[in-house]
Amino acid sequence: MGLLSLLIFFPLVGALAALLMRSASAAKVVTLATALVTFGISLVVYTQFNSSLAGFDLKEQFQWVVLPGLHLSYFVGVDGMSMMLVLLTTFLMVITLIGTWNSVTKNVPAFMALLLLLETGMLGVFLSLDLFLFYVFWEVVLIPMYFIIGLWGGKRRIYSAVKFFIFTMSGSLLMLVAIIWLGVEAGRQLGEFTTDITKLYQVSRSLPIDVQHYLFLAFALSFAIKVPLFPFHTWLPDAHVEAPTAGSVILAGVLLKMGTYGLIRFNLGLFPEASFDYAGLMTALAVIGIIYGALVAMVQTDIKKLIAYSSVTHMGFIVLGIFSMTREGLQGAVIQMVNHGLSTGMLFMMFGMMYDRRHTREISEYGGLARVVPLFTVFFGIAVFSSVGLPGLNGFIGEYLTMMGAYQSSVLGSWSYAIFSATGVILAAVYLLWMYQRFVFGRAKGEVAVEHNGHDLSHTATQHIGHAVNDLSWREIVAVVPLVIFMVWIGIRPMHFLGTSQSAMYKLSDDLLQQKSGVVVPVQSAQPSRPMTPAPGGVRQ
Image (cartoon, rainbow, N blue to C red):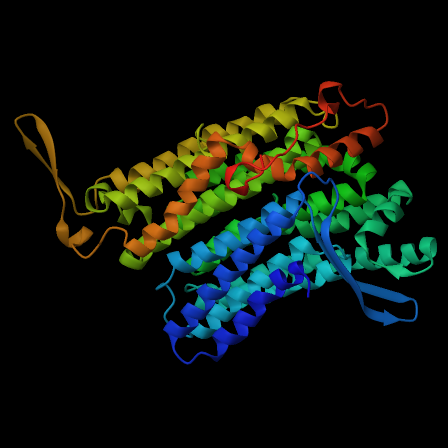
């Protein structure tokens, strides 16, 4: 078994082991140990991966279905973009398990097994180089998330789980039809039915433009639902609100990135001409989602719904960068996938910690927390500022690059997309900082104001805040500190991370722009990238 296969399927072994555990504590220990080992394997993959390659590295391939005229292969590999998402997946899984250790109390072995099965599915999606294999892993992800929401969620968990499943499955079926169509076309051109993406890149580009349009839309609809892109976003707030904390963190941190990953890997890669034709539409939907998500977030009283709608806004920036098709835009999209996973994942996890103490999602039920849980207030504030895009933290670099890419894009042909998207940054500051002020600094419910010598003195109704609301435990601090470290690290030294995906994204952008009729790649953009030499500690920069 190769290194990538070990990475994909090791969590599945841990899932079976966790399921066999008789006690909840044993299942948790097995699951955390499995996640830690999986994260370690991903770091080994990173050290073996050559980020200076623009193509795929560490490839593993063998035929797994061989029928007359039908050749389907198990084909996996990694490039700079998928490497970033693999590391995000394995890292967030460890952090999520530590941060939500006591959140689930019923059927714990089954819950832990489903989380590890979910990890196998997500890793398979990011590493598959065969479209049929990709589709299998894409569908595998649906099963554990459906049960995580449906069995361990809130009061409307069944409705939310079914809605999530139907939305995602509907788009997936159209993608399956497109995959089969491409395989049949490959049979005509190459003499055998194949879904090997490296072969389909050439097959798809020889198709008539009207056929490319249909296939582009079939793939794009499936990925737009997963992102989710406006107006296909309506399943997301329900799923986030009803999911348990661990489900919300993984859903926001990793699952949504499967959609934007697919748009880059398959829509841009397979159908470049159709991508040019639909770039304006996709970008317009992204900008609408940025502004709409922010406006709806401003009026939410449920904090999980507010964070969910903020995801619609932030994912819009990623789609904006993707369809700018510039180097800056694509690099910004990749790093923003990571940034959103860190910042929004931390917001959901930290609110989950407070929800375990207070058992309410209403912002109006909180207030005055800064005096009771100062550590929580500081760390939650860092997550908020990261999500706002404060310079010096990770959110800034991603939003800056995506907007700069859209502004400079010759494909979009208008700077108005970048200008309108910038309003999302302003609105994000409005709804996130307003939420933070009410959540931790606002007057607590039951708090009274007393006038004394001209000064307004507030006295907390301790029976409302409750002396039992404790600050972050050592376990919760261990969970949030690594997230803060990466937020600051990406914010001040982004090239340590951008360097990983640089070669792959630069090549994709240059190939796209050179294919577009009448577009000449600017001289300054055609300069070779600076060498990526190992930095101290083995980090490429």
